[in-house]
Image (cartoon, rainbow, N blue to C red; front, side, top):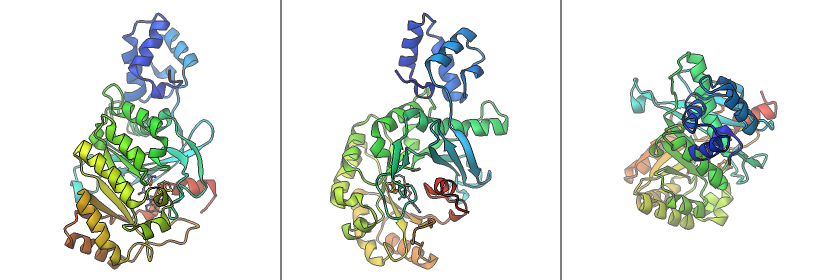
Length: 360
Ligand code: SAH
Ligand code: SF4
């Protein structure tokens, strides 16, 4: 039985109601309050009798993370720094659709959520792993980031029906596949019609390449999208910046990707951050193109976001463009992210780093 309302399922809630001799139709009302109206306390559940609210209050935790800081405005990327009950902080980022890709009228809003406090994988370029791993997020803390974001906008817009987030990417702080069970439980709730109702095809999981967990994911009954943080197309380059590559070298990773593609019949994405002098040499283009062709994968090129305390830089724009051009010339489906992410610490882990380390 979950101890929090933000990770409860209809089955477990009904079981509890029966044990309390409360009619089970109350479960639907309670689930609506939790997942559709983003209630932050049982007090808000106005059509639930006071006696039942008191029991829920005693039996379950019911709270969303507290917003410690918010950056960015309506038209741009907005970043939330959340604090959980033990003081741990993580980030979520809300990204509006790029008009160039989706048109001016698009209401596409993608939320990027975190799955761990810190990260154990220590990729050399990443702010999330700088202080190591602190803990896994509970399912309710993963769901809670989505609910708290929806609640923020519902209260700000004064619209009781407003839903903002229609796309979810698991690309915030942490390695999602290293918190597999909690992530799956959270995604079941986020996906369910009685939960947050976001379709599996609108949910992307990004991983640094935990091959056995990719095989596990292939066996799940969900059509989630899969993104692989590749960042190097040869073992020599990738191992230099991603220690996980020693455990799961590129060939092992690609075998797992192959299983995923075969089971799901879906296209996967390779994320490739361009870091000056590290992986932006044109000799990486051919092996990258080769893997992309073999896996029918799309390549997302992302100019590196500088991280305070780390020496890495993004290459000059002509270098980025040349890398893209060469990939396209080899017949690879590739895009280059051109928006300016630097302004609000857009890469994962950077806002927390700034707040915790008191950086300007
Ligand atoms: N741990 C998972 C998901 C979180 S990281 C993973 O590694 O895939 C989400 C993405 O942000 C990854 O592709 C990661 O490599 C990238 N990233 C990390 N630091 C970055 C930075 N400073 N600039 C640009 N992208 C970064
Ligand atoms: Fe962890 Fe992903 Fe950052 Fe690597 S890139 S340290 S796996 S969060």
